Length: 495
Image (cartoon, rainbow, N blue to C red; front, side, top):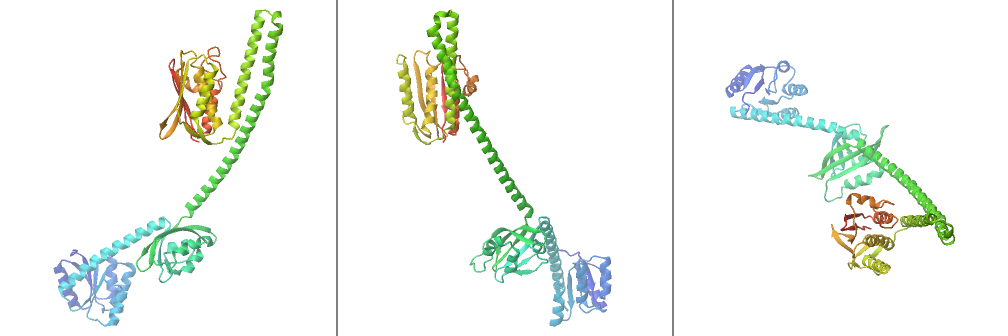
């Protein structure tokens, strides 16, 4: 309760004014001033700021209470309560137009006066808070380039705030028809907006749409409308300028398209270069085979036909030349095989890995029937892959396991798989010579070997082929090994 409010009395009858002043003071209000005319009232207001004005409609001077109240509203929001003995309709109508906070007919009781003043003061506080809130809201909307919108589906018109009107190219805040609104929308975007404004819909639902508007010299702008249904077949919400964001999105899409085109072009150029390089490598390797084989053949002929003309050193040199030429031929054959595997098109199907491994195991056992060996292949190993390429992987891994187990009393090789994250992981395990794991990554590089040619023969390219084939299937290959214990080569096939 605000009983210490500052109240200004406007009353031309001095006795009535004095009595009213005493009664208000007795209630605890502060009443320092009394005005008898409109001019005097406006003068007092210019020098003080009362919390409330009690004003008789009929006062001295050229202006009556209604006119004074209207003048006050131009510069101040101070609440006004009329005190009058007149209750005719014309007087009440004029008073209503000035939006007073109360209207007391004389004579009134002290209780009525006090209650009316308190209600007016409370209402004024609420009104001031509402105005401040609206101002803050408007500042926020302006900062965000937003405006408000109200849609009346029953009357088929839209009321736009000043900011909303400017966003669609209208000059002022006013109500417009649906047709006028749609005319401002870019033709391609109209159907989506019109569907939401369909007055025949039984139920209104919240909608949010982005659309283009075209007006004036500014060209095309992007606008977003976001509204929710209200009682009485109405919508209310906001309209926002999203031109900057949409232009940035469009520019980003254009840049992405441009980058994608450039990447595709560069990829095609790179693929073409790779194809040309592979073709050159294949051609060079293929052409080298003939002279290398000729060298190997000539060295054998010289040993057979002219060995008696040479001393032991000459014969040894010819043998070394022949073996080196044969090794070079093996390397060239391995390069050609790698090139062929890289260039071939994969034919994916379900591959019976167990069957292929058993066939290779039979070939290995037959190649050295005298060797004590046991090759175990788990049945039911299958994968979606290219059968030719999978055979190449198993052939290289099983031949390596067979080769590096040669110095053991018994050769033991296992082909099996296990599940990892619901994915089958295949492996070839041996109990051969093994190696130090710090050199593991070198194994998969072309021509890298951990043993010299006199210990274990080979081209040093087999594991490179394995990695390339596995990579083409979207998988990976790795190894675990312990010197003199054995090695396990592991690979996945995700194709």
